[in-house]
Image: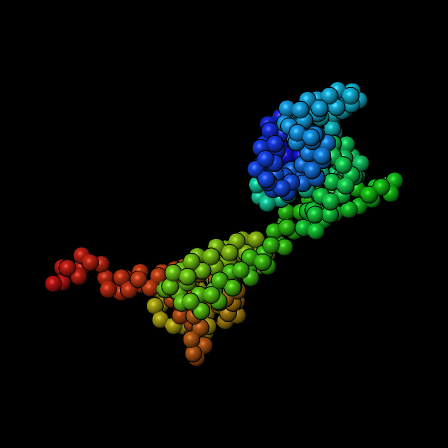
Length: 316
């Protein structure tokens, strides 16, 4: 596993790649190790005949025997078997690595997440994860930068690191702005390349996806009642099949004018409410419903206007 001791197979690969002329950095990359690990390994075990994997493995075994005895099993973490806790931390951390989180920050984060005490000191993290203080410090810095962890002090004025209960909500909100910007940029691209072009079609799919993500994550402040009113206005425009003013909508729906205006404003602020339709404001304060141009390619629109082939054949 990356970060653990080099295996016999690792050493054989190092010997092969050295003969092939690979540098320490490339060998380290292929093995998923720090470059310093490879340089130390080669420097420690090289001889006049070069680096030999079997000899390096034998020397590593001898050094291991000279080390101090393995310490007794650690006490249970928060009352649970240490091995079970460590196994869960490693497994969960591996899943988080798959989402893009670096491995050491992922291990530290899961360790904090599963702590009953609500926070751990650097020394406690070092002891539980069996890593160096520098590794913990670097991981904490990374997690603080993305607001997954914050620092606090306990009664003994020791610095502790905690994961807040609202960490996911804050993380989601931090991403919302970026998602909305991507959606807006993609829509601008559609205007440049054209909705019916291959680029415009791909940008349209991208814009819809990121707009949906942003909409789901963003606390827009719209109440369920306003959303229901927006859907009612959409239904009214579809049913009327003609442009309507705010006054027209308010009269037909028997609403106050402000209620109809608020519903139209909600659609304007959250276009996903009307998807796959769009509400377009025309002259004289009128509103009309139209299909979203990015939902269909130009070829699809042309085919729908021309009608199905079977119908054209029947007319001949």
